[in-house]
Length: 328
Image: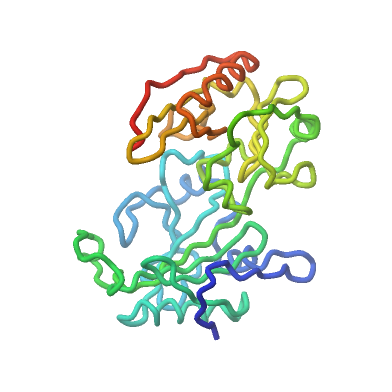
């Protein structure tokens, strides 16, 4: 059985004998197509309306449903996700009775047989539970109606009232590409640039170990034993052919894939202001002109301008410096 706790950290699940990740084994038991690329899945199944929310989705009617499932497992059909990689995020919903706490606990108790017990806790206006093994995780979230604002209009809940107390289940595989031999050499010998500011965002600084988002997969790499993946550095490969960023992930970006750099400048308003530096890179995502990789930030509106121009000169790409925007 699960227990109630104020702790929000996922329960760490050790690997099975032989090294098999227990969450990935569970995904395989549920027949989730984690080895198939998005291109392959779309070619086989197409994009369909989500059974509950009606937005475009990938719907896995062949996957094993959870007890109490309201609908099949689904994945996002967001067009900014590059399609050449495996699907890494699967979701479903479960409902047993008109009680959000009870629904989440029923799902948690079911998963205990495979992943071991976990704690149930409150996060803001939700009740949550989660397991993690490596970068893979399974998370449960429910929204007790008494904890919610009643001013919001939710058409999906009008169509399906059980959504109000359903348990939302998400499985993330943690997939990221391995370094190629050339990339491994770039990372081993890359030359960090001393910057006045911070690499990555404040969220990245707090995040620790996280799976990459599905829109990031083109330039994220598994750091393996080459670099500490929680150090925060930015630099160039020794031959100048790649930009290396170590924030919450290891990003390896070939110079020729960078379209331009952009400095965003924010003046104090409701927020404190500051500046950030982004690399806009080529992408195969059908709904995006480029993929933006967050490089660094500074508390001063002009703090990233010099770094952006220096990096642009060394990479041989253009640099756009934005007007000043109020930090609202």
